[in-house]
Length: 294
Image (cartoon, rainbow, N blue to C red):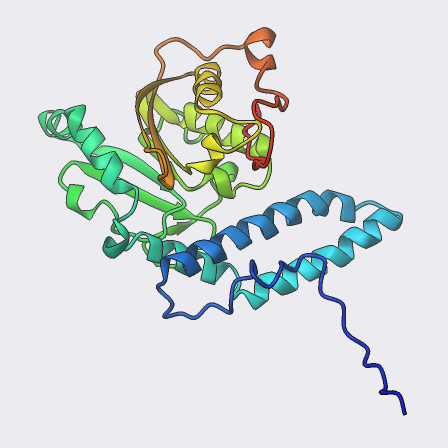
């Protein structure tokens, strides 16, 4: 007698292959590879979520399919532990036994620029807006010459303000900050235009000669089909910044930049911005799609 067939439930359209799907994260997991896998999966899911949301609000068959996929995405995000797990994994990545956070790059750069001496000579402190802060004390060692305001979309600590940087009032905060840190922030913004808007807003909020610190995963500039270090530097010039420092190493995981708000106003000509308003293919082959658009 033939065996009865069992109905198998289809996997969600967002599900990764068994080898790619991260195992259920645990609060005590500290393996670097497990941490990176979970964070990468969150990035994929949230980017796809942002792509589907406008379609889901329309009507028709495509909208219904988009709403179904959004439900699958939300379930997988919850299976991974929600945004709290993403933040926890990112915080683990900032632990000293992992080499510390990006402040270990920014602080020496500020010292090279004699910022502590300048602040102490003026009897004031550098006003730093730390966007996407996961810990409230990243710059505790600089308390004598730096006044830090840490913010994040979903605060994990009472000392971190819960605030969406893109929703901050550009009039209220115009030229209010000496420095802004966008460490592992741009790559977590799903929309390429919003990434560009974030850079424009930072320019507006920085005082004259203010400093902008940017940290990105190295593949965003070294393995993207639309984005290269040279293209990024040109885009920043169009926004109104000049590059002071940059740092990465071949085979590394991170890239860092320090920009200064240029003394001249940002370019407003159509020709200067045209290159940065749409995607341009710079590399072929197996690449990622990271890009920043103005």
